[in-house]
Image 1: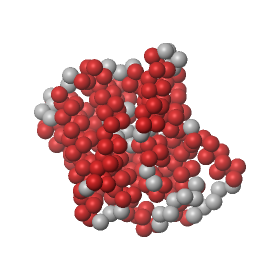
Image 2: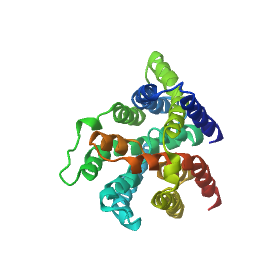
Image 3: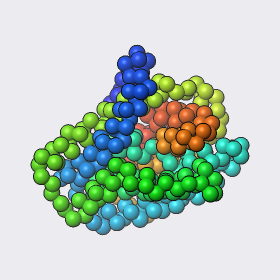
Length: 297
């Protein structure tokens, strides 16, 4: 996480020096999301270092289903716990359910977790896409909001599903393909962390510092919920790989996708942008803290 923090600082400085402007940032983020992240997912499967079994994948799927059922319920409750204004409740709902498990979660999992943990990350990313473009857009746009089924089939989701297919059937790809995927995936950690630094540099973190509700959200969603997950999974007898993976997925910051969709709809996204900035900075400290807590409980 110290290395990741340094990469984020590099991105922050590149933005402050105007080496990476807004247009460059958007294009590089698209490369990370649509090319590098999907390649990293497949490269992890093709590495040969994963020793998980079909049973482990099924367990990951079951855990993922319960994980999102709980988050969806919590998303309905959280705005009332935080006493959010009626016009902002949808945003706190989305912030609770749709965190940054892809752009941040995938490279961080690859960097700090055991190889087998990537199965949980892949499964949750598939579920994320399935839910956001159905349930998420309904929450954002109201009861009769438009669902975007075609957007479910984005490069990340398709590659994640293909990676699970490759894992399940033990498929070996030709070296020219697997090596290309490996080299492309290797760029993910650097580019994604630099882009996070760029995002922080252009966000108003100071405004978020003054918002007591965002701090309350951080305490509940990024600290309390992961600790509860750790305790429940330890009590249920899950292995450390599953616990560490789910703890990471529960402790990543607010994701960008709800804000992007809200901006397209012409909504006021100041709460979302402030929450993204502050939770991203906070996660640089909370993620290693929570991973350490796993060994103590």
